[in-house]
Amino acid sequence: MNSYDYIKIMGEKDIVEKTLESYNDVFADIVNGLLFNGEQVIKEDELEAESEHSMYKADDKLHEQERDVAKYWRNGEIRIALYGLENQTVVDPDMPLRVFSYDGAAYRNQLNQDGKTKRYPVITLVLYFGDAEWNKPKNLLGCLDVPEKLKPFVNDYRINLFEICKLSDEQISNFKSDFKIVADYFAKRKKIPDYRGTKDAINHVDEFFKLMKVLTNDSKFESVYNEGISGEKGGVNMCDFLDTVEARGEAKIIQGLINTGNMTVEQIADMLKLPAEKVKELAEMTLASA
Image (cartoon, rainbow, N blue to C red; front, side, top):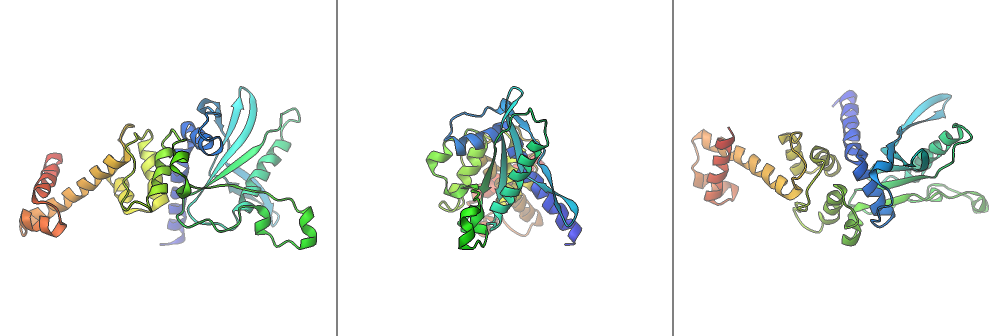
């Protein structure tokens, strides 16, 4: 893979990670669920997208830095706060420095506004989807080598980091949007082999499964992605949809083996470790959809 292809793939991955969370219902749900224990403090119609881009100067050049998702919480024309979400699938020892730079840029932007504008807080939530424990600093001082005599004069900065796989059932029940299904999966996939998810209806189907694909790198979500899900409407659930896509894949394999003319249904069933009746059913599925 050349550098251009790598950059393109990473760019697409970055976009996919943001899309589901960019919906106001999901964004508000994440903030309400993690910060306010499910209390509906923020309403989705009170959110306004903010440019995720900010600039910083280094080596006498302006460089762009980009948040994952950021939205203003407004009451009419008044900005109450700016919320930002950062997704992590691996542990980043510099995360406090990154969050500090994002938040600092947002405060700097307020300085550049009309002096009559009411100042508002900036709050960043780091959503960590990895299975390994986050064993790196969660505050600015943890990233710095500070002499003892200087410590009283160095301000600390703590990040709001949430390890999704460690959320309890009670915490997960605080969510109301598609993020509830995401959080449930990450909290249970290590405890339950081949966990297929809940029966909760998915509202943003295409965005949901694309997010699961990039966050998990799991072959079953790869299959869903390759099957094509853009035509699916809200209302399907993760468990049944995965079963359906898996069945389609098995059906194609079975029909291909039957078409060779070299194997009987019983031989195919034995090879795939499936009942013969199931093999016939899946083969008929392929013929019906042809």
